[in-house]
Length: 347
Image (tube, rainbow, N blue to C red; front, top):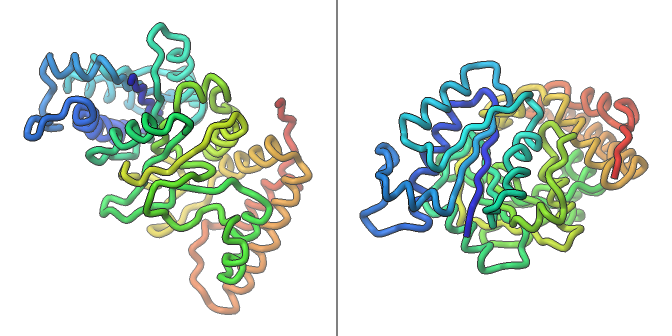
């Protein structure tokens, strides 16, 4: 099985290099493992190892026109670590976002003479645990009707992060906003981010930080929508795949460390709060309008705004701590279809 791994870099060269170092051992372990013979991530692969690695896997790092010295740092690291046979650095003409950066590597691969069987989308702020890639490949090989699978994302200490989700809906937006236990129980099947599963299971979509896709899914559902700058593009893509008959699964035996907020401007609320960027709200609005129409999008906005307003009042009355991003209600209103507008979206 041939594997293409795509990492989109933007001002995160140090993280990307650390990710590549974790891939160094993980890829070797996947297809050429003898106990006691796995390569140390701190030493370069010898020529025979490089040939083996190059024969079945390729990594493409696309740089979204980073304004810092990312490109120079990445190229230097590839040369210094002797990764040139299996890692390619591709400089892009603009910062077009997550989907744009991924498509720049995926599109040429789909029309190449040696098409990959699978494409793994990987965030630069990830560290691959031993066996993570082999777990995904084994699962896809054993389940040919599955089109997409995602890893268990976790903190460096092993604490799992929610990375298997349901598609956003009106009911799900209401539950997300109101944060009331009885409502969550009543709408349990609509909760967008349910508790972390302990075993492999089918879900609606998985986080794009570590998501493997069968080549045929891209051929049938198309590339990712580049009109999303960041966020919701993987939700949209998984929905497009579902509509073509492909299922999506969560595979917890594939463990990947995800340093939340290290690349994007959406921080980990458990550590500190920062204002949510405009592109998050714009991507959310696009998802609803594109896939369900503006009336449905308006109902989803109304459901969330009503529920979240109730929560804000209840939080004050009950003197609960404020863990939300600053100005979240104001931003949610200004970027809703009521004030942010309804964009024209070609199907």
